[in-house]
Image (cartoon, rainbow, N blue to C red; front, top):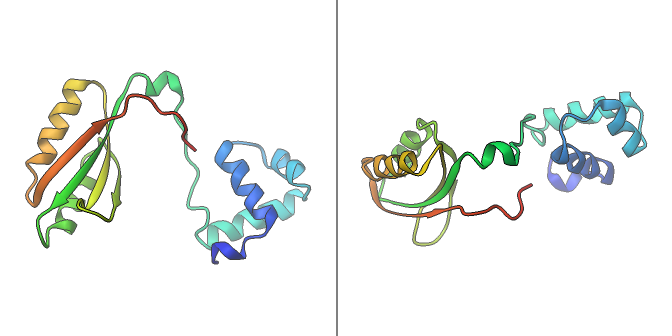
Length: 146
């Protein structure tokens, strides 16, 4: 199902789920003005078509304040991109990997318990075979996250 095929109710449902995926079905149905049965059908369709891939926890300030996060821009040697992605995917502290355009090939989102652990992680990643260079920026504050 292309995203362009979503109707306004689907878009509103996705917005509500992004705010709080734990809202009861009855509450979601009431806010959208549809029956619970219709809502279950919509959710099933959105899941089946890959629009909704799962439901997750968004961590609050109490937890994230205890973590240090960074964005690492990574330039790989020619023909090593897949190997680097696979090696990064094995590291628990790598939260996401994004392919990008420009002088770097990817951005890895890193998270550690403290600056010493983040420094070790940065060093470990820099030593991976196939990495040409990296540039890391530590996240000081998150102003908006959806």
